[in-house]
Image (cartoon, rainbow, N blue to C red; front, side, top):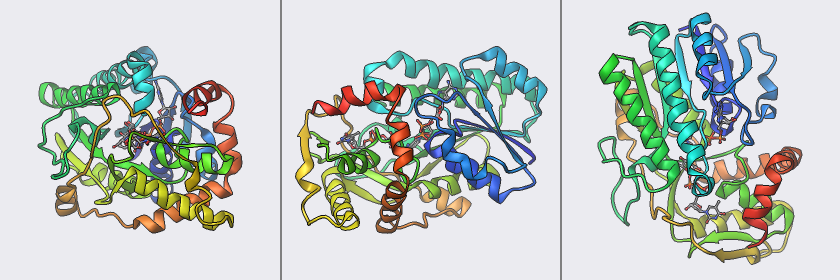
Length: 349
Ligand code: NAD
Ligand code: DAU
């Protein structure tokens, strides 16, 4: 494998995937294609941007002619497709934008890959999906690869739609596809609209910590570098046409997680115990808020030999330390275009 196209490589997970591939495979050429929306930030890749096997290409997956030219010109061996609109709350405000980027954008890439690759089964089209396509669990059970899709938010509906198109291109046209569905990621470069970095950011600013409903919803958290390692393994060893679940086996109720983060922040900031917890504010619940996600990733562990390596206390400490050492990054991403949205969504609560 020589030339890889990574879409969405300037975003949170994409930047960790790009860094891993660029540093582990100096013989590969890694091209990062990203539109640089509010969520894409080249600062995420500053440490590897001058590597000879890395290049950045600004582009929009909605521009199919641009994609077609690119795929005709460059002989990519694989595409790892992460570019997406990724935030559930934003999808409630603007579902169409999610349908466009996540469904039509994915379809565009499938089209041009099919045209350019002409039935070559050595190629790989690897689509990065989410456990949210499976819907919501009750108190018991896990999502497996054969769980029915039951998306509840416009975001998860758009991801489920894109998964269906990927699968359709495998079955109808023999495109060698891979899909993985991961649980909630956390770690450095996570945009502060998502739970963990939002709480860290708001504690630093002395702002309220908005917990939706009673904080009883459960998420299964995985350190982002473990997700990048799983993507690496699936790219190289995954079987075309298959789906692989990725998860941390690490379930937390939101309120317990926020309280743990408050304790870590108080300790790191030298504040008296309870200082951050006093900022917790219970706010109106997210509409259609999925109660619980929990992933059964035993197939990936058994068949491809992946398992998570970063335990949650270590991962959270590393994450908090990164945000404390990168306050400039936080200032940059919370200013400019994002500012209006950020103020509207969080300041009034
Ligand atoms: P992100 O929002 O941080 O990054 C998305 C990236 O896609 C950004 O760099 C953005 O500029 C780029 N992008 C958006 N629209 C584009 C377009 N039209 N053309 C080109 N680039 C475009 O997202 P993330 O959290 O890193 O998620 C990456 C992928 O992983 C998504 O597909 C998401 O559904 C999936 N995923 C995320 C999680 C999670 O916990 N964050 C878990 C499972 C799966
Ligand atoms: O499960 C994988 C998914 O995880 C990914 O596909 C998505 O791209 C990613 O954004 C994430 O979705 P969630 O909706 O689970 O993540 P978020 O960080 O938005 O919320 C996590 C939990 O915290 C959820 O139950 C809602 C709650 N929450 C979130 C925010 C932003 C709050 O209570 N308060 C908040 O301010």
